[in-house]
Length: 252
Image (cartoon, rainbow, N blue to C red; front, side, top):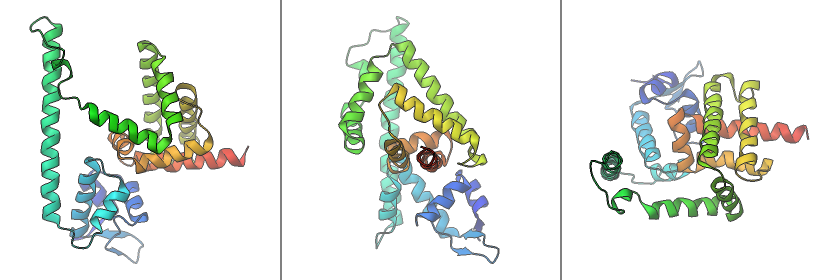
């Protein structure tokens, strides 16, 4: 059996734009292209896409996934066993965090008394340090430090207002994806995004803004965050931000 882009996207819960992008970067090419120029995928592509989604869920970048899947002698069963073990570890940590939430609620209601250590059960401090170090390596210490300084200078109310603004912008971009990355609606929200970064986090030139967009599809933490909002959003934002920067330079 063969599947069109629309059919495979519907089965996997991803956007057609995502499949087109995976084809563009050589990650998931179609089995054949018909005389009508439609892309068609077979059973092997379904398994291949499943592996891509598994690795994305586990935090791998698209480039890393491409390297893994294209390795000679790639063992599908062995890979699935690895996914299973990694997911079981995630389940264990998630259950631990849920327990911490429940115990904290009981503590606040006065039903139990939690120790200081119990308040932070399930949080991985070393993992948080690794995330911060990755950010410094990718974006540079200057941007990370300035972002941290500005953020910490805000009151809790100001932080909530900023988060609400960022959520509004992200939702605005996601809602207008069908209009195209060069549409006035999308570019309005991308402009708001550029302004928000400069206002709330750090001085962001067009070069940094464009590089940040590339990071949305290269950095698994960014990608996973945007894919939860809407599948294909990370790749769409990258392209829309690049277009914004190109237009801004042309009219400078």
